[in-house]
Length: 156
Image (tube, rainbow, N blue to C red; front, side, top):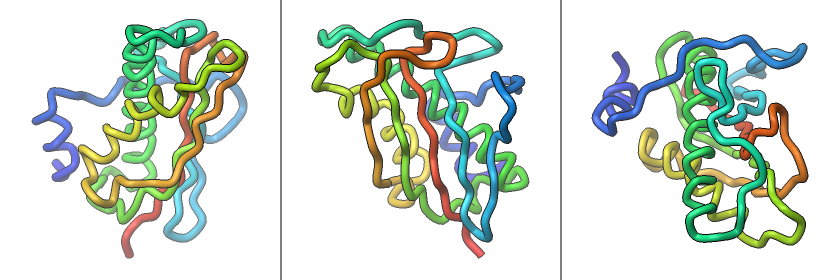
């Protein structure tokens, strides 16, 4: 078990079961040491866990953060595949692209996406810090509340 998976266990988190993609795309592609992870919605065991627009209320933003955490765990599952099962090969999480299903004008998309960012930092330490976008959109696949994609660099 990798040190990253041990931290995952210590945090009381687990990776999701495998799932089929919603469309015709690869879960990741690799270019040398760089892994491009396809967007992952907040889906677990075949079911979307958080549906519909994230309201700009304190409670709504907290629920949105939970949705973003599910997205992060889905990304890490696919990242483990890309690392041939060894998450300790991650050198740096370079970027997250984040989409929040929300009403027009919401100003708090970065707060929602902190849920995903925190998972990457907790698991990968300094290597988990990343650049990111946090964009509000009017809809996502499965009417999911959040979708996140990632770019990650592996060590030699």
